[in-house]
Amino acid sequence: MVKLIKGHLKPYLFKIMGNVCFVVLQIVIQTFFIMSEMKKIIDYGVNGSNMDYIWRSGGKMLLFTAAAGLCTVAASYFSACVTAGAVAGIRNDCFKKVEQMSSQDFDTFGGATLTTRTITDVTQIQIFLINMLRTSMMVPIIILCMLILIFTINRILFAVLLVSFAVTVGLLIYMGGAAKPRFELLQHKIDRINRLMREKLTGVRAIRAFCNQQLEQEKMQQANEDAYSQAISANSRLNFLAPVSLMIMNWAVVLIYLAGTQQLKQKMVSVSDLLLIFQYTAYFINSLAVVPVLVNLLPKVSVSCRRINELLDYEPPVAAVESREKRREGITSGEVIFKNVIFGYSGAAEVIADISFTARAGKTTAIIGSTGSGKTTLMNLLAGLYRPTFGDILIDGISTRELDGDYMRSRISYATQRVMVFQDTARNNIGAYDDACTQEQILRACDAAGFTEVLAKMPDGLDTVMSQGGMNISGGQRQRLSLARAAAKQAAVYIFDDSFSALDAKTETCVRKNIKELLRDRTVLMVAQKISTIVDADHIIVLENGRIAGQGTHRELLEHCEVYRKIYETQCYSQKEEL
Image: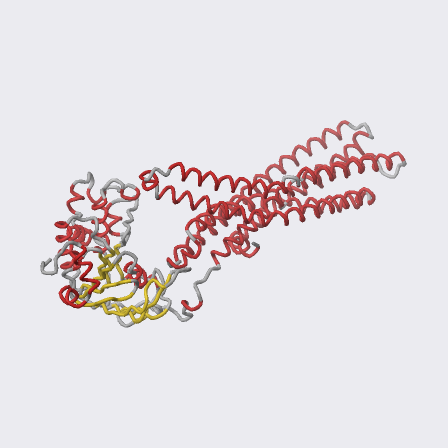
């Protein structure tokens, strides 16, 4: 916890010092000027019946109070600046870490817990910091000053206050430590709620289509009840901290008043000193009331810091990490070679095994197979979204393990199965926010993907703002936008992962022909379910259960590959019929 917060507070050292200075100045004014002035009023004004002195001292106290108020405002400003900056830094680091993760690393955590750690856990740190800098920082200073001042005036009353304070602190430490595991479990419950919420939002159509609204409501209600019960359990112990600690300290005040009265009767202490001690004690008790709030926050922020540190300190498996500096050059033609590649998702058996093939520049290499055969997994491995368990992938003779991830992906254009449309203009969606992508490239890509006719119907053409998820266009139009985005990028390798599935036969044929002509000098890998999509590919790879069942052209595979022939027959083509 200290490491995380300390690291992000360093840039704000000057403002922290300013905050500390104004907090100390506020306490000094409150203690040594305002309270001391009250003692002088009694000693010199009341006892001496000197009204002029009382008025002068009263005026000074008003000025000191105004100065203390200004110090409070200044300290609040500095604490707000420090808290906002530090929390923004932590959240930014979390976002950068998630952005740099491969899909394999992302799967290790899960989207729900990453969301909770980046938002909820960081918010817990924000609440802790603002309380720490504004109020909690004053507590140790006030307690130390009050104990020293009371000790110099009356050691017996000091002993009563010290014992009560020690008992209270011991109770706070014990109760706070006991509550920490409960808050850790509570965060896991919140992770589950976030996960369920994501499922409901992304799968709302499927839920309604199968009339499962009641079931999903029950699941969410159960998750909410679990979180509710855990929150009650975690907070139940801490809820006793404030009343118990105040009860102990109030009994200490009663004892101080009784002892002080007896000492006053025996003339062991003056009236002004006793009143000053009472003031110091009241200030002490009021400050101590903040401690239960801080102790309440500590278990929560400790758990949150641990979870954030887990994210920030996460490193990929040692076997997949190269210590040497990654290469940021070397990809020109884009020839791709898979060498005995084996891969399996975390917690699952091998998805692909012993995959070896070459995709040459200027050629179209197609991959076909049944659902779950590993087609998309191969493309994810090539794009660096996952790391092979065994074997190697070469681009222009360079292992992807040696290439910098950002550089490698800058040389690969990928049209994924699931089309992502950003809430921005069509221009930025197709150009992918790349300043190097010119208007000419975008228009040429739109022509090739058949998206030009879609733009013609839009009110502002390329400057039309797309709705979130592309809900203002159809599924086929979204897929053509994705094809245009992939074609517009200047890359060495182009991947089309089942990117023609939503197009009708006529449009698909036209778009494939245009894209093949546009990318004739590039390395093109095309994943498809339909043989009609890849029939004219230069090289076709057939996958079955994660292994290569055959390689060759369409005619060669019809003659020698039984798996390909069965797919061909299943798609209602006779063996004698030409596509």
